[in-house]
Amino acid sequence: MPARRGLLKTGLVLCRAQRGFTLGQVEGEEYDHEMAHPPERMVPTAEHCLDGRVSPRGIPCLYLASNIKTAVAEVRPWVDAYVSLAQFKIVKECRVVDCRAAKSDKLAKQHALIWSDIAYAFSKPMSPEEPHLEYVPTQILAETFREHGLDGLVYESLLNKGTNIALFDPKNADLINCGLHRIRGVNFDFELADNPYFMTQHYPEIEAQIAGREAQPEEVLEDAQATAADETSE
View (cartoon, helix red, strand yellow):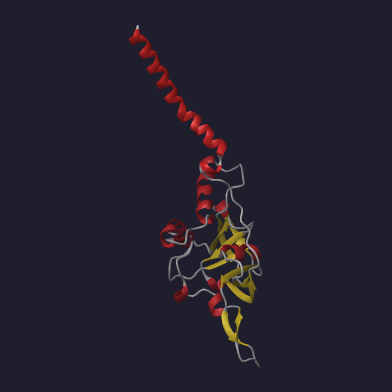
């Protein structure tokens, strides 16, 4: 694992997004306004921590991203949704393990395959139905890294071209600003995963082909019956 270790230097600025907003009042106005989440919402605390890719429920972990678009993509907002988007600055040099896919041909094939599986486990999007079950393998890996004295880990985002960073101790980065953003559009990229099916009444040419194939056994049967009748008459 030494070849996989890296450093996050003091002063590095990273991004964090959280869906939603907080209602608050502007001085001189009567009605509440949508505002970015306050610091106590953007900085994770034990009482507000749900199960995550790196940490189980109740154990705070600071999830960050290398750029704004990756941070926003990771929270999977919908069109016209609000997202509170913040920047954090690393305040202590952090030792991290790089869980991204292997790029070097120098790695032994077996090691490359193992790290490829680890990379995908940390990067793949999880279903919202039972995340606490799907997160268990990566939570165990993260705890192993923590026990080896590491401060966090780095993994790729499959939702955007960027990198995700998870810090085991949220105190290793300071919140420096936060603003509220509205999502104006969402892009989807997809491919066919299985063969399509067709309702034949809307495709006359397909229906004709099927009808032709179905007629063949009947024609063979008629020929056989005619032959039998001829042989009987003889």
